[in-house]
Amino acid sequence: MKHLMIAFMAALLPVLPVSAEVSVSADSFGCIRDLTPVRGFFVGNLKGDLEATLKVAHSDNGGRYPPGSVVQLVPTEAMVKHEQGFNPATNDWEFFDIAVSADKNEILARGFTEVNNRFGRNCFACHVQADKQWDLICENDHGCAPLALTETMIRGIQKTDPRCEPQALSDEEQAALQQLQSLLEKN
Image 1 (cartoon, rainbow, N blue to C red):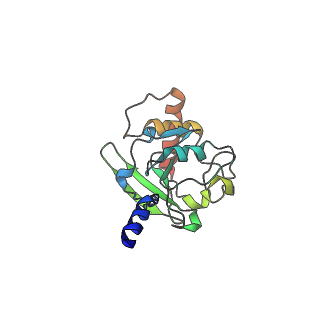
Image 2 (image 1 turned 90 degrees about the vertical axis):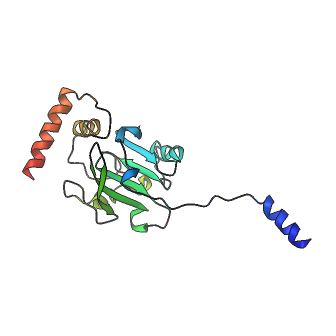
């Protein structure tokens, strides 16, 4: 009888969700414009909790992004938030350098404090400058150094993600991308 009562009581206890690790592969990343736009960057959530990610992204006071959050400014770079304690040095963010094409993605580099972008700049070195309440997310007023890209260049890059349906570029965006191409060829 005692065992039956324990089993009955256990059945009445609420089932607590088990927090699964965030699994990330090249297939985790698709057309940047399929993510949700927020002030010029894009967010998603690999664990399906987009609402919690958007709550922080839209906050005027910042906050800690939930596990599974994906933040992208351009198609070839991403940040993914892992479970608390995954990497305290990076507030549990993992940085990705991604080669994208219409056919597939290839993760060129992934990690924490050691990943560099296509311009040779260290991802973490820039993002660690963000004021604490922004959880390493850089925007114009978050304490980070200015980007080497103009807003027009960024919009052009976002519109030309080869994984997305084609989107027309303005004359200004075309000129900005030509300028960017010239800068890249010099490096």
